[in-house]
Structures are given as structure tokens and as C-alpha cells.
Image 1: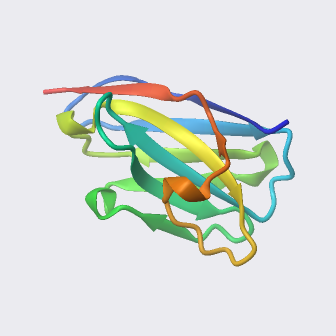
Image 2 (image 1 turned 180 degrees about the vertical axis):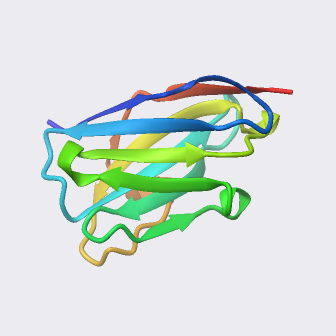
Length: 126
């Protein structure tokens, strides 16, 4: 059974940084797209970033390019999302997701992901 557990959420001042972690278990950490998404209640879920576990290639939403970095530690089956220069409007529940990939073209598109974590809340205060 695939399990994704996010951690690292919390409160941060605008302009600050936060790093989220997502530990994957019950799955071979290979040939996977690992993605980060965020959602505010009442709004559409937004894809933030995604990485292909085999060689670490990543894609980002335009809104976070240059400020967020997705990375991984294969030995720990863990993917990270380093967030810098956070804005109040980026307060949301952040979710980790996983999907098998045969071509390594991993995009943060929610409908492509089969497994989801419970989320971790990030609150950015102005």
C-alpha cells in the first residue's frame, strides 16, 4: 500500500522560507513522478512542482519558478519542496502525490497522479 506522509508545514512571515518533506513508503522509489500541489478551500487545486525519481528532472508552475525547488533523497524515499520568498496568497494545504511514469515527463497535473498524502498546512502572514 502506497503511503505518502508530508511534513514541514507551519507558519511563516511573508518573504520567508519553508521546506516541506514527503516520505513515500509501500512503493519502489523508481519510475515515479512525485508532485507537490496546493489547495485553498473553495478554490481549484494548483500544481506546484514535479520531479521524476529516476534522474531528478523537474517542472514547476510559472508562479513559483525561481522561488521554489523540488528535490529528492533516494536513500530516504523522500521528496522535498523548498519554498523561498513566500507570499500570503500562497497560504494553502500542500499535498504530495505520486504516479508511475514510463517516459519521465513529470508535470504537476493533478489528474495524472494516483496516490496522495494527507497534506500539510502552510500559512504565510503579511
